[in-house]
Length: 109
Image (cartoon, rainbow, N blue to C red; front, top):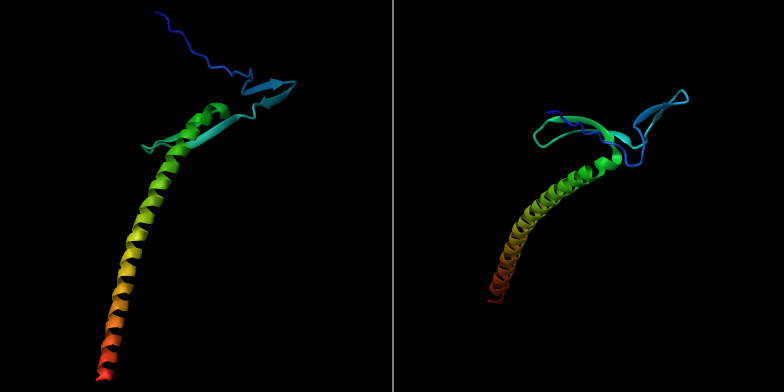
């Protein structure tokens, strides 16, 4: 049984690199993408920027979700701390009010 090779071609008819009239012509959309995946494996790939677009858009959306979750966690922690600080300020204000009222009552006697 023979295997059939799959060849990907540019829908615009371009080649990544070709020599024309003694000059090297490179596709401006041919990019190199380097990064690390979720498992920690490094990747170094070359390809068409148009083909990488959807993959990079998905990665960007995933990172935006992580940032939104981290921002929400920070906001919730700040609200907790602000509520605690407000409780302390209220307790001090109530204590101050009671002391000044008691001092005023002692002066009236």
